[in-house]
Image (cartoon, rainbow, N blue to C red):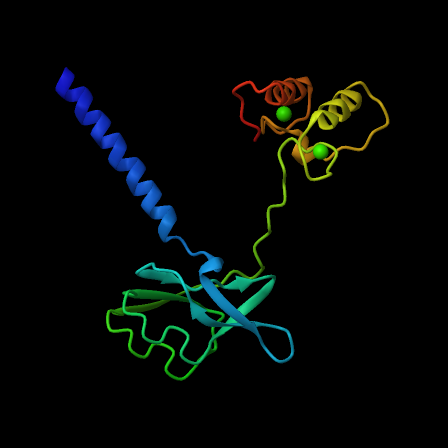
Length: 184
Ligand code: CA
Ligand code: CA
């Protein structure tokens, strides 16, 4: 029994490590440098500062499509083994992948037709002022008592069950009282 338990723990640990690895490999726009084109309608990737071996070039950056790989953007990067380019790319600059001696695979993926929605939601920020504090709990309690206050409904649904009610207010109060609760 003891051995089984240990194996289970090891399996669980491996799963967690794989998950962490997976998220580390995901495309991060932070790892790229971009330049805006002349008419301000699209971006080109001009460099890559990350250390991943498998690189996915983002399809959108700051609300505009990424349509080009700039000259020498990945030049001399010997860590990269595969690159996935969005279908929005129409131009690859000179020497963009020159000296990428480990690069074996260049694939493409279908670019999204719309820029990704940036999630600006702040769970618990009922009054939408950027921070979570007792004012938010009070605003929510007032709202629930039918006072004439405006609340950010999305931020107020802190247990993420789709409705704003007293459970959310209680969760928020617990959070503010340093109970071990997580605002969703
Ligand atoms: Ca607030
Ligand atoms: Ca709720």
